[in-house]
Length: 108
Picture 1 (tube, rainbow, N blue to C red):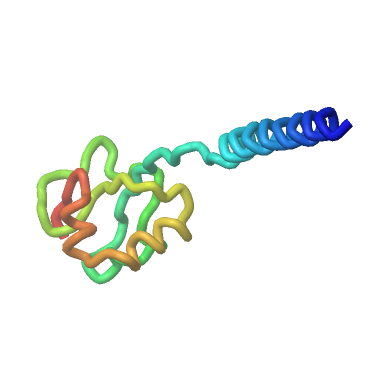
Picture 2 (cartoon, rainbow, N blue to C red):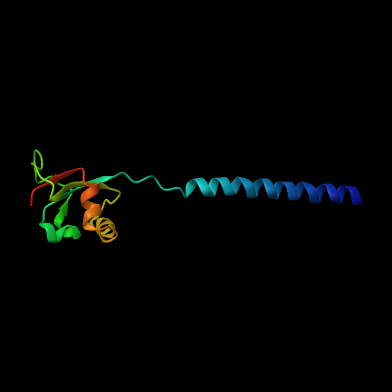
């Protein structure tokens, strides 16, 4: 009798462990978010506006290109799909860092 109770307890314990491990993998894989894609933002302001998201747009106003220059950023690709996310990025970086990260530049 004691032997069969031990087998039942071990079987139940093994089943609980298998379910727990399985759930851990399923729960972990379902909470992963899709990776963000970079959004290209185009700068429309002056030198004092670089760190203000209100002066950036996802529509290229410089069609076909930004022209020649090195004073201001023209376009910037970052993991920010909304103006609020872009503002977070701009606030966290200096004007020089933003200018260095820009793909293209335009004159002031």
